[in-house]
Length: 243
Image (cartoon, rainbow, N blue to C red; front, top):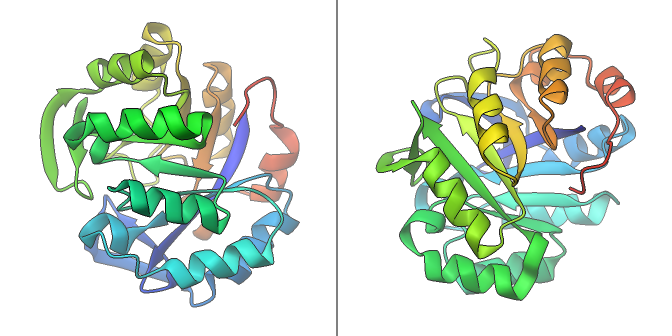
């Protein structure tokens, strides 16, 4: 299982939100590219980057930080947040982003998602952010009324190869992931699943690996000193899942 460090960008700063609440912001660095470089030095083989301003408003406020990160490190990055048009997707991929993460348009514009998958294949990932198993969009503000497992089956049908699944209730709470949900999703789908939200300890990572999942995104647990990321990357290497 691949361990993927996370960098959340807000106003070109590295931050973390609690349960997606923009009123509960912790700033960790004013130089996200330095944070990215540090993760590469720790042994990370890819990074997860979310443009929070993009997710909230659709505006590419953090594009300069993304460019700096690409210029500074050699490992691939996956970027999400506010990618709701073909033009925005193409701009990021042309910039050097390895994979883009689609969220809202997987619900609001399935035809666009199909076009992106046909054009870019495995470079397109989908983020499913759910509360009590129901998918939410627009930066976790709007409930779609769609069950996670139903959306996953639709994504499989159109050729999406991997998803990032976040249980909103667990995100930023440092209380552990929703293991039962990941086990259910794994049993009922063939799509690659990357866990996000609530990962707090090395034991959490080992349990996710045993399910087994394709990857796990580590964010707040590292920034708050709960996980030795370098040790986790060393002890939980990538296995047979292409990310």
